[in-house]
Length: 236
Image (cartoon, rainbow, N blue to C red; front, side, top):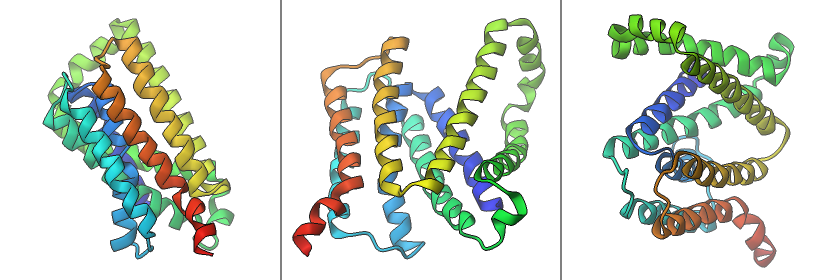
């Protein structure tokens, strides 16, 4: 469970840093390229062959991300690199999580997938503490004071934590009960909602080029998810 917990902590930490370094919508666009990272990792590290059709979909995803980034008013290299790092952690986490689920005797020892996610989340939190103290330890006192005295900070943090935990637990359960195509399609739909919704709510820039790049990138992710099913009848 340790590799899953470490990657869980790394993916979340890098994502949060990306959103703080740039706009939330830009971070989400870059994170939509996660399948590209997963494909490379699966092919060369986990020795799971990726079809040629899927490889041909990757330039569409990457091109969409580049197009969306060209006129990004809130572009920041720190946000781009952090989001890419989050993609790497997430790709490793997905592969390791699937291996963990297939471990013989695991279900008898810890029970449901929900319990597995709970344990890895706690471990991920514990692994994050040294990094937090190293990076933000000097601000811990002022944070505690703000948490006590600012109701908006307190309520937003608690709500964010509950939504984040619930989303990731359901995502883990989906990985167990469905296939990768179903999960990827659902994840693609989530990106659209988050990018457009957050931009509207927070008033972030959402010009034509960004919308076009976002559409191309996310369409590429969707095509990547279903391309094998589309070309399979022709191969037969």
